[in-house]
Image (cartoon, rainbow, N blue to C red):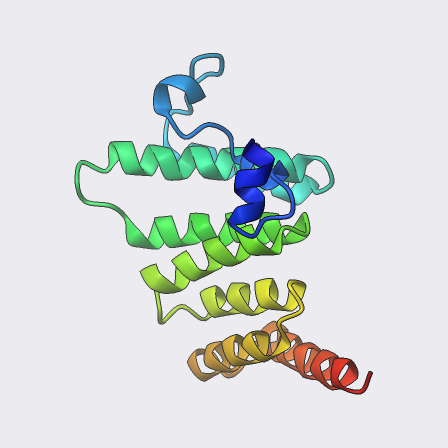
Amino acid sequence: TAREAAERRGYHSVTGLIDRGPLEHGVRWAHRTRPASAVQAREEGNACFSRGGGALRLALWHYTDALLLLECDSEGVPDSDLRAALHSNRSAAHASLGQHRLALEDAEEVTRLRPEWAKGWSRVGAAHHLGRDWRRAIDAYQHGLELDPSNAAMAKGLQDARDAEVASSGR
């Protein structure tokens, strides 16, 4: 079943994968209007993300739309900055929904596409933190702070991960 396949991949729920929707273009837009562009789909995703709550699941759909449109409309020249931003946004949405493995997949894709972008490392740190992998969260936040030493949010994430590591080792 889909649930068993997801669990074999390490997911505890298929909800996040379902929220992304079908990836085959003909199926995905068979009963929905295809967005005009990846940028439009991203803007719709951002609006849903800003609303929060149940709209976060819809944000995942829109970010996935944008990634698929970027792939099929790129004419062989993908925009890695936009692709990285979309994976970053989708990672944040997955993290907000407590889906740390999917958040981590997207965050790692961000760092693959733009290894010098501190925000990607912040997303990796947040995903590891959500998954209670304190050491990897700390490593990711430290790497991000090397790239952007004045990033207060990342410094707070690093301190939170260190505090959580100390608290968990004292049990």
